[in-house]
Length: 356
Ligand code: 6MZ
Image 1: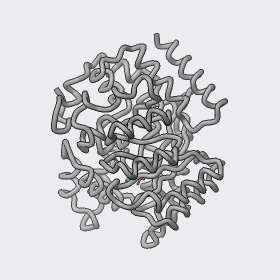
Image 2: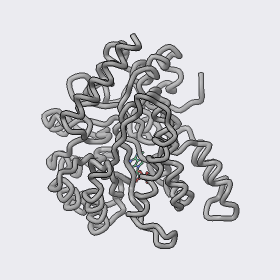
Image 3: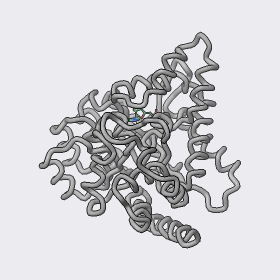
């Protein structure tokens, strides 16, 4: 049932999991560690914003056509991000989408999230990286001001460097992240079109962040690029995103490194980085290597963290006990201090106890 969302091989996600599995995964307290702000915008908000731009920079048919594709290549995905970025140029919109993304995560029983976004300098829109971040902070404040939850979602931010950026632009973002440490920024992310740019360009910025006590997560192996993947592994990020395209030597290197992996099943299948859910490399790593399930872009890939857990439960035949362990273990892969990690784990255990 449901719309076909799988890639080229294997059943669609909705054909895999049952309603009961989804309900169980919704009730699980979960941790989201890999979610891009502009990829997590609600579909309804995208439609509303693009409809409001009559005669503007966005062609609505173009946007709808891109947004409705059940399977898209990574190249098409980045075209879609360019279109989304054309409708998120204003500070009020950044504030709104930030608030909505947090609302959606909290409603999905996400108890802790590290939300990532690329601070953007766009002088033509009066936007600087600093005031872009102010708009994000305002969205966070608006969420908490309106929330009536007693046990609310806990939030941290990661600043992303886009692979299209120069060494100087990357360094500006790293410096900004260091300045915003007290405001909830706990690390840097390297993301963007994996076919663009060279690892060595952004490395000094990541080194800078690390020297100043920030943690670093890097997208790697989203496409076949063994030289770059080996160099990234040798640098030893604090977490790694994707790692879909590995040969035996790289897989061994990754296992030895013990670096936690952020795995995004729908994203990887829809963009055809892996052929099907059942073929996803999750099963090569779980439970011996640290992994955390994440959404990547819940808006673009029409998913939620509960749905990603349900897909994993069905595709890899995970028991309820294994799902609980998977969700809880993520506390140890957050960029929180050890004391904060322990408090988070305790909060999750209490929630699990209440439910069962
Ligand atoms: C690599 C991705 C991505 O930062 O504008 N992004 N980078 N691989 C992916 N796999 C599908 N999905 C999203 O959010 C959108 C940006 O996140 C990165 C891209 O740089 C994209 O432009 P922000 O909030």
